[in-house]
Length: 229
Ligand code: DX5
Ligand code: ZN
Image 1 (cartoon, rainbow, N blue to C red):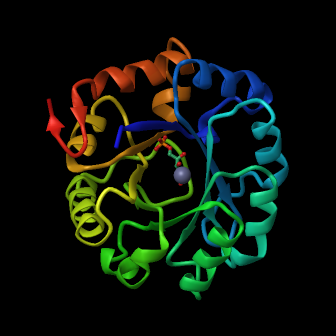
Image 2: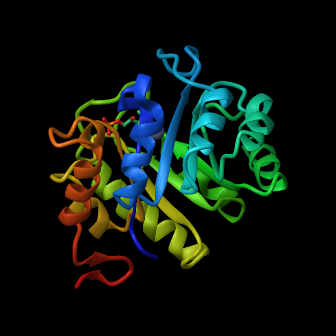
Image 3: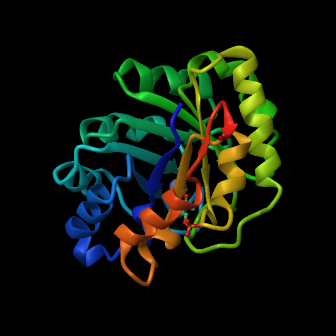
């Protein structure tokens, strides 16, 4: 699997949404990460299907929708119709996780499960056959620009080992929170194949395109499963 960069729009200039998306698209970001927050599961409120649909209108890249919301089943259809390619729900928020993943896949979308830093990886053990992606949170969800939790590197390595044991080569391991040129290399070596980055991309002094290129350069020569090469 190649390692993909997924800029998180949470840190973009929302008044310039279209040009911000185009900038990271043109810089080669393979995925666009959309952070949806409801003010219940997490303290913050962000964006919903309408803005997701607007983003869909300006890029062909994979739209990676991260639902940080309670009762995700209620909105999965709306995000699918808005053009999401990957829909990820939190294990902590999806009470009937197996059903929720079936709902996502039933709509022809790739299904992901996200785990907060305090949630054991074993929380996904019984649904490993139903997922296309496992999202390891490296901050507590809710805000951009938070400090990276160092233990996440080992957690990504354990997540990768867990999915490989059951579904070799079939599950993306994504990491989200505090990803930067400093943290990306260790995460890539640990087996992350999707790197979400918000402030490191959109807060880059030379603009978001340069932010994508800087992260890409930081992981040059690293691939999974071969490790550094
Ligand atoms: C956190 C969000 C992240 C966030 C990452 O709740 O899920 O996607 O935007 O932002 P940075 O990269 O700034 O930590
Ligand atoms: Zn996210």
